[in-house]
Image (cartoon, rainbow over all chains, first blue to last red; front, side):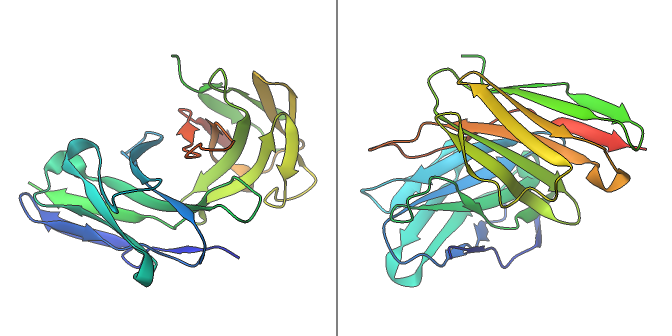
Length: 115
Length: 116
């Protein structure tokens, strides 16, 4: 079965610090990968996605993620965080060969940015 | 595009009452998902539909929960009878399923359910 692991449950950073959130998935075939963000009291919104092509994906608000197939990873990065980046971040994977189109979500990483 | 629409946004009810949550997916999308989010259990997939047909309901917690999708533009999630442990935020999401699609899911604003 597919699964997604987000090892960091809560990350606390000061403004301007660099961010890297880990995401590992278990599916060995072709995948679609996603990072969603959930701001306090809001719904999940897409930050970025990997579908095919360049494994370095750039998303909104200065976020990027790198798909490393050999490591089954899709880590999220941002060179300089802002207080407004305080939110929960979810990694998700969709495997192509399962015949299903649901996404498997990680348990989320809560990011707190201190001004 | 109005996005995924959910109603009500907030629901407070008493234990034992029936609760019905509603969702209108994005026009043209053919997959619809119901999730539940709580502090203790995080984000859980309850059920999803492709082309109005339930595909996987293994996440539905028990028989008190039921979901329907009578047409491509409407779905309901019903809890009868409701219990305090059902208190959560329920999200509906929709996506376009098919060859070449990235399967990105678009989430609605959620319904915050409180069962007293």
